[in-house]
Amino acid sequence: MFLKFSRFHQVVTRVGQPSRRFIASQCSQLTNGVLYEEFRLNSGIEEPTVAIIGGGICGLSAAAELAKKGFKKFKVFEALERAGGRISSIVHDNRVFELGARWVDDGLLSWPLGMACEQGLLKEYEKRKYFSEAQYLTHDGRVVNELIGSQALDAFRSILDQKGSSQVNSCHWKGSSLLSYIQERTKEFIATAPVESQADMSNAMTALTEGFSNECAADLSEVDVGKFSDGRDFVDRISVPSGIVNILQMFWERVDKNVELCSPVEKVEWDPSKISERRCLVHVSGKNPVEAHYVLVTVPLGVLKKGLSFSPCLPNEKCEAIEMLGFGHLNNLYLEYNRPFWDDNLGTIRLSGAGMNSKQRFKDWGSSFSHFEQMPGARNVLVTQLAGLAACQSEHVTEEDIAKQVTRVLRHYTGNSTIPYPSNVIRSKWTNNPFFRGAYSFNRPGYDSKMLRETLGQPVPDVDKATCPPVLFFAGEACSTGHYGTIQGAILSGYEQVRRIIELTMKYNGLPKLVV
Picture (tube, rainbow, N blue to C red):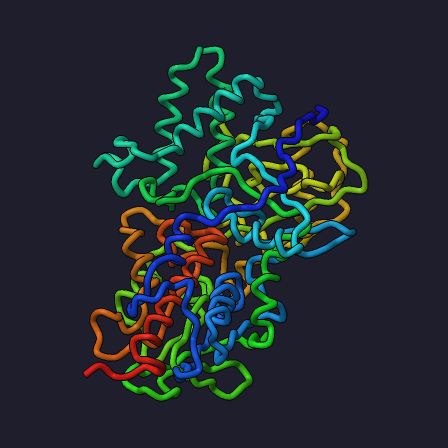
């Protein structure tokens, strides 16, 4: 079988616009009536010290916002030898490979791209459809009819569009998994198709369902059907050929002297009853404890689950939120060939496991590949992903093992025994990295995920319940109720906590004070 596809992305050079939520926060008033955008820390106010744990996009953007507001006494502690977190763009053979985040959702918060373009940090970026047309290959080596494939894609988009859906929000589906919902809706749709089309329709819908696990970074049986999107729009995506890491530059240039790399934080001691800098001690590996009035924690949820410790322990409700929110696993794999074996304009191929036992399909990483696509701008590179348990398993095998298994899978599905082995495999390993322990969060069935995320993002002690001013603040994509799992959600949650620190600084006219 000779693979033949079409490219489905276009170059876009427009400048993004700020989100409504961001504009609203900039125009809103602080406690003293000053517009947030107009606030600057003046010399008459004694500045509190702020320690930021984590130098990913959340930590860097929060630090840059503090600097913009006139704060100078802050430090960012990053465990790695580089900043950026899961924004990790590497250059190989004059091409950029994204090991972590591969795109920014269009329409949510495109202003970072716009600002980066204005500053000359990005030359261009590309806009792609969230679900593009694809060719569907079946486990028994057939190609699904193109028209049926398009019909299946439209149906799958409709199934995922839950806005205003009384069916999804009914008692019948309350606490159910996304997988069970998609499977039942898929059966209903296939039943309406002509009998002669139902087999191909089932294959295409199965391929789309299996591929959607990559979007959630988890097995869909672990994802809540009513909460899986929770404000997220599955819209067009923007990728950056020169590397998403370039977006970091506009934040980095404001705070580079305040960032300490290779500085993993092991423990945070906190005592809100103190008003000195010793109300919080940040224990950095190999260094003396760092004193601070406020600590902003921006590490991934996986590190909060297992890694960073607090003394005393965090409040029970905070610990429960950390435990109950799901944290997914996702790895990107790039397969480089000496020469391509596919048609000149490869788009996406999706592999259907319909007819296979589900346990057989996902019993190990080697049978869990759901799609392959040509890397934009790279004629001889294919991209694929592994999610959930498969992502974890794949980190324990070699690049040679991956090359062999990918080749077996492609030969089986295409029926082409001459497909060569890739000459090089470039991949991520986020789960085994102790400073990440996975990819990003998801909502699990049976829990009020909105409440859990709000609880996770609440300062400690709670501003409204304690007589002591907060000392610990939490930010990151997992704290975002609307844009979790995205770059935008991470940035916005960091800004929200910076605003709280500014509010407290205004309230106490400088350093935190005990409330009488």
